[in-house]
Image (cartoon, rainbow, N blue to C red):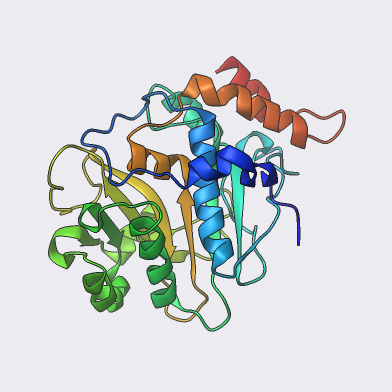
Amino acid sequence: MKIPRRGLLKQGALFAAAMMLPQAAPKRAVAGQDASAAEVDRIEVSIVTHFSDKGFRQVRPAPLVTEDFSFNGGLRYDDTGILETPASFVVQPCARTADIAEKHRGDVLPLFHIFRFDGKPGEDRTDAFAHVVGYLTGPLKLDPAHLAFVSIPSFAGLRPHATRAGVDWERQVVLRDPDAALKAGDGSGIFRHPGDRTLPAIPTAGIYYWVAQGTAKPAENHPLPGSWTEIGELFIAENGGAAFAFGLERLLFAAMGKMPTWDEQLPRLLAQIDRDSPRGSTPPGKTLFTKG
């Protein structure tokens, strides 16, 4: 088995503290409210432990610095192409140079982490949905009534499973026009990789969580209003393996109502770039983030 990225986190008090996640989402969540890196680590330990205990294998993430310096400043944009075997998962560090212009937003970070999961042989999208809801409403203790899904009509096949999980289909599910979802390619219905349009478009369901005070308002149209924050995506193709991905910092925001700040994450990004850069080479993305 390959060495986990943060194997030391499974030792001692930090591992014990990771199991002490909140009983429910906060009454009021404010993006950008200060959160320590250790709190992100605790979310990571929680999700890694949950899926490891279910028989899935953690694999080493790809370097943050890629070989293609012409796209995204030579930094890894998402989790595309990371996993090649079923029954495995990865915690992949990512950075998007386009986010520099949005750094004033509390929900935008220079460094973020994607938890990507590929199901076991024979598992399908219904199994992936069960894994998604099982973790979110189990170890993370999110309220199923505060979840929303934005997808395309083929997602309707999961309606019985969503209802059994406590999802009110009429209030919590938005089905977009497939052509509009394909054109957007934003993962809320269909995902298209922005750096390589030759890669196949992937039918998905965007997973959102209500982070404002009180009862969640109905999810009626896409884009959902600001009190809904996207936390992940579910792969929903009819004929294919089960898979999904979450943003760890977004999970922290949903569970605890706070995220690391841009200034807190920037030194972590620069350090990660230095660790992952080929000797004698500096990706242009580092300069962009340093000056931005």
